[in-house]
Length: 199
Image (cartoon, rainbow, N blue to C red):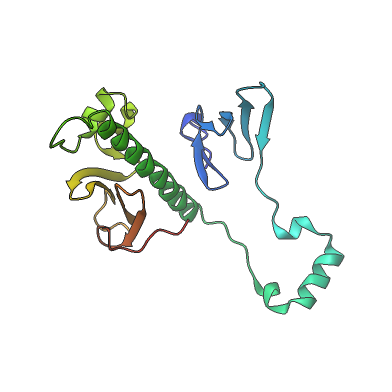
């Protein structure tokens, strides 16, 4: 999703992970995102890398072989390939919120570990986690990328919810407990009894 006005708002999905300029992706740092290419550099070696869209099936085989494949597997010949930017963006937002809720989960775990000698520890707020350098500043308000995050204490320790900011949104709801298992629900807030998310 390339933003021609402000390249810093451009995003790309690399193997299921949403990235933007300046992000780290494994050993790489994302330098820029164009309409066709993502440029990065290996932070250890300094080597430049490029990611480009995967070729469509019609581009991977010569016409003669494509015809043979279609005749051998007739149902596949009816498959159509469409690219819906809204579906791609929705998928990217959900991929990001899954990454975010795991990041919040790790932050709360570390927060509790630093206070394990205290009794009756209350679940921390997002400002508290940001001020303590457990989370980056972008989490300070408890909202990020069209989702609201909440942290509450529970019998098992703590639990975290991520819910769409828009009440009538078709986006999924997410829940993760102290055990680190991610659950998801459609149309209602997720909880420990909701289906486990399949990656």
